[in-house]
Image (tube, rainbow, N blue to C red):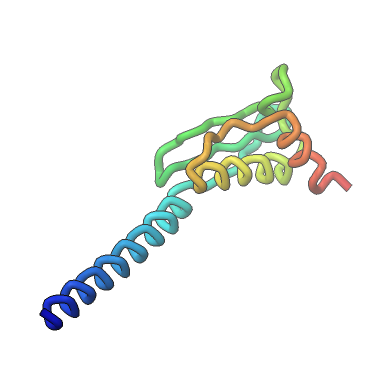
Length: 110
């Protein structure tokens, strides 16, 4: 009986370790799947979010502020795109609020 209990405990421990490893690995893999690349437009910059080699989001204009304004700098486009990557990596919606976009635009505007 004692051996059966030890064997069961060992199996449960092994399964728990495998589950922790696999779950952690999935999060790490998910974070590596998304990348942001800023690109020049005729009047400024935009960004593209790639999932592996596939285009997931093509964003030539500043999101959430209305109109068809491009990012004035490559850094602003990259900062905004990186926030989208962070959200996607956390399993969240890539949608940005006006406030989030403003924070990205103001991040390195000094």
